[in-house]
Amino acid sequence: MDRFRMIFQYFQSNSESVMNGICGLLALASVKMYTSFDFSCPCLPQYNMAYGLGIMFVPPVILFLCGLILNRQSLMMLEEWRRPQGRRKKDLAVIRYMCSSIMQRAMVAPVVWIIVTLLDGKCLICAFSGSMDPEKFVGFANVSTAQQLLAKVPCKDDELMMNNTSRKAVSRYLRCWSQALGWSILLILIIAAFLARWLRPCFNQATLLQARHWSNYIDIEQKIFEETCCEHSRLFAHKCILHFFESMRQEIKLHSCSLPGEGEGAAGEEHFLWGITDQDQVNKLLKTWYYEKPPLDVS
Amino acid sequence: MDKFRMIFQFFQSNQESFMNGICGIMALASTQMYSAFDFNCPCLPRYNLAYGLGILLVPPFILFLLGFVLNNNISMLAEEWRRPQGQRGKDPAVLRYMFCSMAQRAMIAPAVWVSVTLLDGKCITCAFCTSVPVETLGNASHPHLSQGEIQRVLARIPCKEIYNGEQLIANEVAIRYLRCISQALGWCFVLLMTTLAFLVRSLRPCFSQAAFLKSRYWSHYIDIERKLFDETCAEHARSFAKVCIQQFFEGMSTDLVAARCHLPRKAPADAEEAAKKLLGITDRGTMNMALKSWHRCKPPLHLHPPALPTGNGWAGEGQPPMQPSAPRRETAAYYSWV
Image 1 (tube, rainbow over the protein chains, first blue to last red):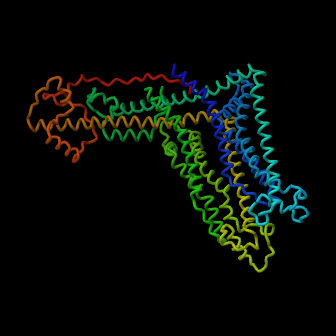
Image 2: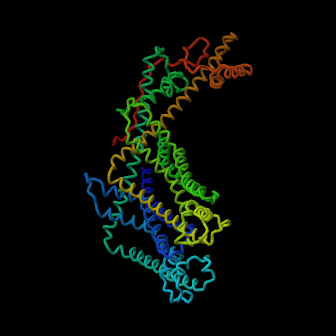
């Protein structure tokens, strides 16, 4: 009983901490992905915006989907949602609770990516350098190919852009905006999270406790069902094999006219021999196991 | 029994986590392989495409096959697929489940290789540098260059040291363009794979959950049954070997006694244990003969029933009265939810 209780507590605490751990790992993975990704702005007028905004928004979608896939609870929520009612009513509050907790965890890594991208600034510089007003910058004002030049601002090594002070001005301007945006988003999100956590007990606390309890219950029930099925299949297999060996022993006894001299020999080894005492009998046993597996019936 | 249960549960849960671990290790190995691989574009018109696409597509295929090879369950699947029906019907759903779960795990390392290759950009740059749109990016009106010459010049784009077409199209511009396309393709590929994985995982509970539970149970059952059978055979082999060797030594000592016409005294009770373990061999010459006989003429794989008690008292101790072996009763309790 004690062992079961320990196992229950382990599963209970472990499910949430496993999910939090995965969430944290994904956030770290998103930072690592950003730093190892070789950002390479095309510096062409039509392509800059698509590339910059693509790098800012496509990986977050991927990270969000990964967060949903790696979270075991999302599968459980879907099963609970789609199961036939049967004899157990469905509680929508539980499903809503599970959905919101899954979404919250899955949103962490995408938000981390977006914030890191904005704080770094390269994406926004690449995407919006072509949309700048050339008149504001000395080096680009009254130049016929201003658009082309502005598009090349993100590429420091371009021959036209090297040592161009106006390029640095545009770059600084855009980076400033990018970082301001990044910090503002971070501040808003943290305030929202803070308010949500502090104000939650003021609304529907009882319903929340119930929903959390029943969602944990569903999780534990699922795990125990799988464990019980494992144990059952182990015992089933054990019985099946015992029956098989027993039937082999009967067959051998029928076929061979051996003396009934199969008493307790050699220190109880007889128990493991199953009356199979020579090479041909062993070969026959192995062949029968392959060609004619016993039926799945241990009654 | 408890110990067995714990070990089996460990294997059961561990088999899946073991497989997931191998999957993760292979994904890491594929990124490591890519970074250790020294990419070397040939910079010749027709060879570039072959080399670039080869590096993009051949290693994933190898990694996919490796994923199957490293998976222990492949032999289980093959055995279940090819066995004769006998008394036990075959369920194609179980085979499909086993194959799908193995294929899904084996797909991860190749997908990682393709993503890393596309996001890095070298392969696509090498493969498609001859298709760069010179009209929009460069100077298409450059005179005195035939189509073949242009192709040759463009093919050298990845090799900056030997590139001589700055008037045609700047090297940096071409490489940035190709890398942008490559990275866009890479991210789209990753998005596609992730979306597919998400759909596969989330649509299953909506459609075939009961069938899925059934297939999963029986595929685990097949695995456990195979392991238990191997264990039982191993136990049998151990007992077989023990009895065989014991009978060999008994045979030897019977021969010795017959040869020497030496009636051993009945040993006192406390030394009987030690005498039993000596198996009738009490001097160097006899031991050497036993060893030589074991090497030259191993006993047949046939255990004879223990001999009836004889006068000299050597062929085993006093036999218990012969009983017919009672049928063994198993009283393991098990849940019958399935």
